[in-house]
Image (cartoon, rainbow, N blue to C red; front, top):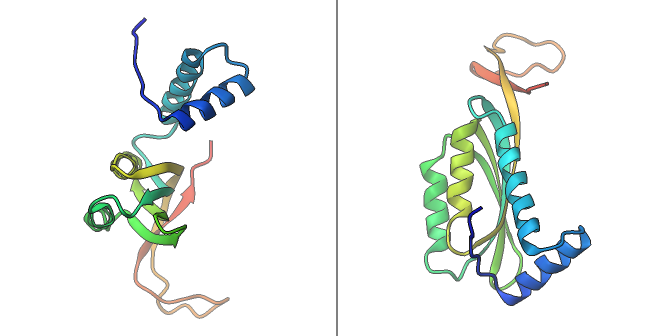
Length: 161
């Protein structure tokens, strides 16, 4: 077994100890091992080679030097994956952003990881849904039942099973 040392702020350590006790863990190590196992299993269960739609939500401190600019640059560099971004000012220091993403699962996950790894980003959570392409089609010339007109595009549907 390997020993890993983790430094936590005092209030975070107290909250973690309370959570571990509430869930019946005998030690911090048992609780951390379970969290790590859960994160690895969750990652493995997501289809790594397929397509997905996803929501990445995170809180960040906009006073951290150039963080807002770096987040914007990351988003622009991945404009093919970022569908939309919703931004909320929580208080004088913190903002909440929620990004709607789509694309290859591995690329979406890598983008989410890059954002969550930025210094000053907290509470990053990725909700990923595997999807399958549902064919490409166009609606030109259709005028039945509220049909709409636009160029050819690909629909995505949730992957079942």
